[in-house]
Image 1 (tube, rainbow, N blue to C red):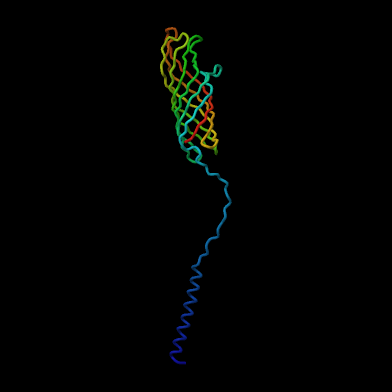
Image 2: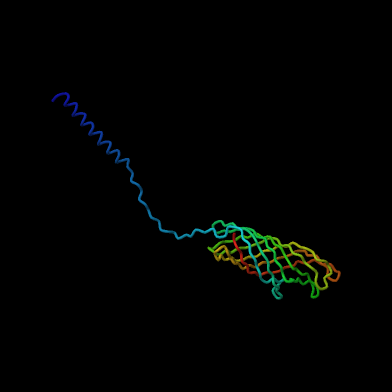
Length: 214
């Protein structure tokens, strides 16, 4: 056998060995892709942003001083803004309410009468789909006038207001709500038959309202 033939045979043999080793290393380095695992649907509903935005509306109901034995009609308007974060909703509202001579009794013959009030309140609640359950609290301003044997003049007082309600989205940017509010005016000065006194006054209101969201 010639030298050329031996050299060619050696080259072919080496090439075959290298190819065999390369194939073995490639097989060792190959990692199959992980199998796709299908997870079942957890059935968790994502809260929709139903309540974010400005709104304005009107309300009407009954209001009574101290208890509901003698209820008076009340009605007014409100406007505010809400921001929804997942299921949580926060915001603020201003409202004006007229009442049909709401009377706070100081004595059987003397009292103070309220005809209007303004309020600025914060709102916070939880959205359950198209239903909003919320609490509210803030400040109220009202003018109180003398009645009966009350001899002091009319004056304006600030107080605290708080309550809770439920609001239902009806679609087309319309919602309706039912709300309870309690308002307290502290250290109200007056005079009955010329004798000065100081009282804490409380009223309760239950109203139904409608809002349009912009």
